[in-house]
Length: 258
Image (cartoon, rainbow, N blue to C red; front, side, top):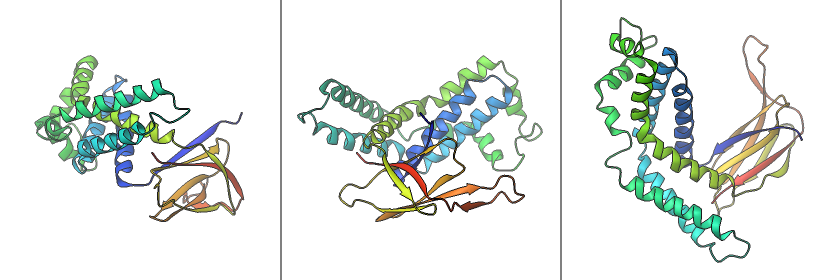
């Protein structure tokens, strides 16, 4: 079987925020698992990105609203024929538990980070190119020279407010992804367009392509339709430009909504 690459595109602001937080949390976990000073510095910068993203978006409220919405939708399926009652009950219990735990958080997610003098200083200097040099931030470089396990313990504490958020986002995104089966589609001359169903707006588009092809999808979406252009990246050119493929492309598409 040919290995597949999956390209995902969120179709509303809530899903876009969830994707960004999920990506940043995975990145932070990756750097957290390593022990070099460069990994520790990258973990701190990713933590500050998480704080900035959640500060622009009432993440706790949006996360609870989506969990409650999904819980109501899935609860309506409890008596439907062919439904795995035990699996459904487990998912419903997970959703309710996450809603309760999120409700118990006082204030915005990660609010304490904004009032942390050490982290605030790094965030301010990080806006300047090369602004994290030792002469700019000696306290950061003192911290980076602490033993790796000491730094890791502190990073785990700073990241902990986002762990529950990531748990909720993972559950939401996985349920949405599983809501649709990929369907074979065809893009004439590297271009595909489809109308969006008004009665059940899609939340995520998933494009499936073989790993060995020389192009990737670029999705543009509005309220009524979306289009996909399959682009080729000219890495061997001086400009590194992209151009739309002229091939007729077979791919699979899942339009996911829950």
